[in-house]
Image 1 (cartoon, rainbow, N blue to C red):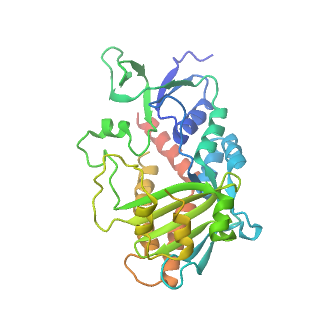
Image 2: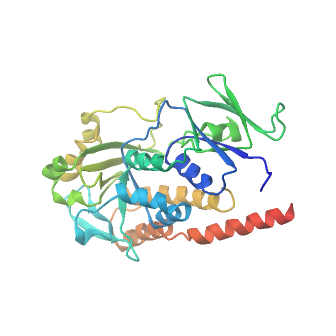
Image 3: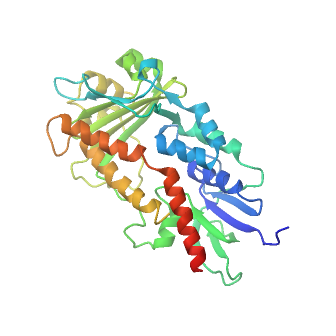
Length: 358
């Protein structure tokens, strides 16, 4: 019988990433003691949609087939059977051809693109958490101190309410406005805080039957409308009963002056932003009031996501042509076709090398 002392791990953040990590770690050894610390008073996720590509689905399956099964119970594909393997229909958003089809972007190797309500997916993941995983709500991290003086070899995590914990490892899963990132890098580090991309988005989830009456039955399948300085993306969620709508707009160099990242808006402001767009996009918008392995890919993903946004907003070229279609598809292919298992093997090899060096 092993006499190794238990390994204590603090996971900061009880969103999809934090809960998934807890499920993954708890399946490796009963000698790992995991506690999730969440700043909010309960589990909480926005009700908007999340879409997972082939590599993400494969990664879930490698972590635990139960996670894939949970996702499968809440995912929603395009509602038309003939559109099952279509990532999205790309349409003109503005100009005289507004609403007309540009191209149908299909997936590869039989993959069926799906989306899910983030809140529903998180609820299913929570059901998979072992009873051995501790949950502490109302715990906002204010500092993480390595090699604690009181308990050498431990890391001290201090919380806003005056309490603290001493653990072997701390893993930050606290999102884009991560307190852990700021603490690790330092408040003045440029990478410590999220940076405004120069684009903002209107987001809403609406009843599917209402959207179909307003726009037409094609919104039962994923749609992307392209226009100068903006694009609109829609996808069915909640088993086809709801439509997730996100309308992106380029700020034309105007800085974000609001203290909060998410602020209320109005129908009039939204319609003014999209006043030159066609009838269908406007109707939709009326509703819308890991270092060596993962870091390089993560950084490249940020760059490609930014480029993809510029491509979809027709920035840098005025017309839609074969080159644009190819560049959009290549970016998507790079995201979807990642060799997750290869990355895992590479990570294991690096870990083995590290152990030997020690």
